[in-house]
Image (cartoon, rainbow, N blue to C red):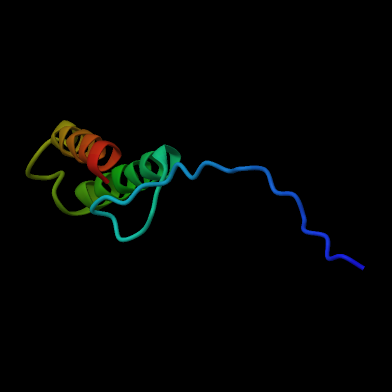
Length: 72
């Protein structure tokens, strides 16, 4: 009897490596950006908001999100 091999469809791997320590796709990088957005805003509201307004945290996190999505 001859051995039968399973037929597998070719799969294109779309992940990439950037400065993040693991391979990511676009959704992963956007999700990480959203998590950073929430975490930075919570920390900002707890510790910094009495000194600086919240919109500064929004600008910081948007810039961080652009870096993560493009280079991460």
